[in-house]
Each structure stands twice: as C-alpha cells, then as structure tokens.
Length: 512
Image 1: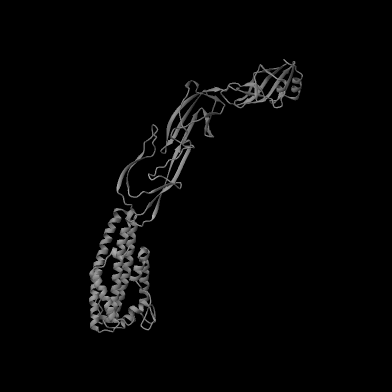
Image 2: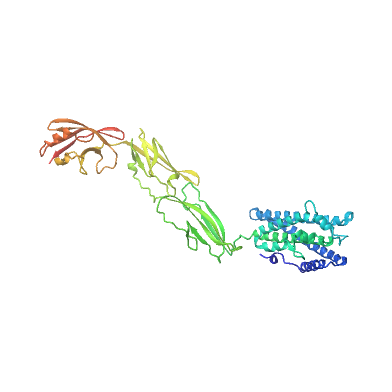
C-alpha cells in the first residue's frame, strides 16, 4: 500500500517541498540574510498545511470513534491502535515544538516568540548549535533523534509494507560532509545552522509527523474491513438442533441468513479429508454411540490474498434400529434372578437414559439393564431420558414376578444330554467327563446356571452317595458290573442356583 494511494500530495505540498530543497541548497552557499527571510514563507506554508492536516486527523478520529461505539467488537481493536498512534504523534510533535522554542529563546532571549513562528535573529549560527549540541551534558539533538527513530520504528510495526517509505521520511542516518567525514543527523540539523533555517527544519519534521499520522489513521480504518469477505448472494437456512423430537420435548432450530460469494468456492475439510464443493459431509453409522467430528473451511482473504482456515466441530449420536413389540400376557420376570433387559429410546444414546425400578434393584452391564426383583409380586420399570439438558419421562411398564421353575436333571456326556427314561451305552455312562447337570433342557426359555452339589445312586439294590456332580469310583465299579437292560437310578439330586438350593426329580437310565 503506497503513500500516494492513502494521502496524495497536493500541488501546494509539492511546491513547499521544492522550496525547502532550494532554500536548503542556498544555505550551503552562505547566502545573505535576505534569502533567510524566504524561509519564513516556507514556514508559514508548512504551518498552513499542518493546520489542515490536523483538522483532518481530528475529523477522522471522531468518525473512527463513532465506528467503534457502533461496533466495538469489529472496530474496537483498530480504534485503540489509532488512539495510541495519535498519542505518540502528539508527544513527538510537542517535543519538536519545544526544541523550536528553545532555539528561538536562545536566539532572541526576552523577545522570543512563544509560538516559535517569528525569529528576529534568523542569521544567528550559534544559538541552535549551542542548545542542541552542548559540549557537556545531555544533547537535546541526540534525544530528538532517538524519539524520531522510536516513532519511525513504531510506524513500521503498524504497516510493515511501508517500512521503506517511513525510513526515508524519518531518515536519521549519518552522512558524509565536505571533507568526507561522517556527520551525525543532529550535526547536520543544528551545527552552524542559522536559527531561522533550524526552525523551518523542525516545522518540516512536525509536518512529516502529522502527515504520517493522517496516512496511518486512514490505513487503520481500512483494516476494519480488511478481513471481511465480499458477498453477492444471500441464502436462508434452517439449522435444527435435532430432526427428532420426543413428546414433551421442544423442537429447536436456528434460522439464519447466510451471505456467500458465488464467484469463490471455499474448500471444505473434515478430519483432514476434502469434501465436495457443496460442503456436504456424510458418514456411515457403523457403530452406535456418541460421535464427534471436526474440520475447517479454507478460503482466500480478499484483503491479503492469503489462504485462511476457519475451524468447526460438531457431534451426533448413533443408536440401534429400534422397534417395540411385546406380548402383554407374558410380562413376567423371575425372583432372585438377573433378568436382562435391552432398553433404548430412539434418538437418545444409552448414557443419557435412566432406568428406575420399584420392587427391585437395577444396574447396567455390557449395554444391558440387569433387574433383580425382591420379595414382591409386581415390579414397575420407569424409563427417563435426558433431552436438551432435561430429564423427560419416556414410559412405565409393569411386570409380574414369579419364582424360578425347578430345572430338570440330566446325565451329560460326549456333548449329549440324557433325560430320565433314556437308554444309554455303558461306555457313555462311565465316560470320564460324564456329569450330572441341572438345566431347563435344550428347549428351555431360560439359561440359568445351576450346579449339582450331590446325588444318590441305586444300582442292583445298592445305594451309594456322591458329593459333587460326578460318579464316585464305587459307583463306576457298580455300573461296570451291570449287563444290558441294567437300571441306574439317580435320586435325591440337589443343585444350587438363583434362589438357593433345589431338590430335583430322579433320573432313570437303562443300559443298552
């Protein structure tokens, strides 16, 4: 961004600059005092330009302040920078003004003009040097150079693209003199310099400060819109929080007016993968649970041409396909048994479902709800779900409570179960892995773990007891003596399971 675009020089400013260069060259020729009087004309012209610039600065800051008040979030940061710029510019301007006055005071003593606009001893070549470059103590000229350099670096920090321009305007570098010796900036400005010329040089510095201030205020105002995207099309969108609403819940949707630039197509990315140009994201819901995803939109900043990223994130829930089918005549659960229930609410993840039971206890295990009734005849299950931060009732269901039916006893060997009345080969009956089991059989509706703890055998009229669920060695010896058609009776079979110990019906096995 060039200075010409921000604050083009007027013909008057160009004329003043030319006069300044000509008169500076004439000074080097030791021209007469009459020529120095012409510097007053330059000084007056500079003051006229400065006054106009200062008015523009105040008007622009007033407008900037109104922009800040109207939209603090967008314009506040840039207004604060402009206010700091104004403060720094005023500080340097006032310091230079004091340097001017001190030169005039050293020149005209009691007749010194407080505004430092009029210098009676224009041709005095000692006053400026004695004030700005004293032989002892701090040199005001050196201090001034430091303040100018600090101000220049500050401007370059605000707009790095114009660093070279500011470097030329506020150049404080040393330069070679007539004999080739390097002369410091303050030596060039004040040593053997007529007071009239020194005052004009300081006025020019003040003018440079005000012009730089004006240009930078304009620059900072433009930055308030620098990051704005240019749009040429408006669309209306409805963004629902959820497309599924449960009775008692609330449908929530945000209706927005979206502005887009149809001439520029942003790039959409989710989890590092680019989407199509419409930004449509689809994911296969292969597993249930709460899902989160994030990404960014990549677009070109119209002010800088740089590619920028705008991040986003969202989430959704995946549930199992759900249908409710129940036989109301068989709403039964068993006392003292871990009754397993699969409970779900469509559109709600399991971690947001709450189940309470009156007449029993409930807990979760491996995605199922385990309900154990107490000594009651009926149990009531109440289901609630968290929706939009609130727990809402989903339903209540009653179940009758029954005692677990007694299991049947079987002899199990070689992956086969033999019920009472079965024919069985002797080798199978004496098989080493054969055991007495208690279950509801292959067609049973329940899969309840029972453990046979003891039983009694009657073989050829001889009765033998066994602790555990296997034949003892004595029993196996007796079975080995049986012939085809021999009878083995298993009775007084006891098994442990939910609800305690149960005594089971006898089992009669015939050898074939």
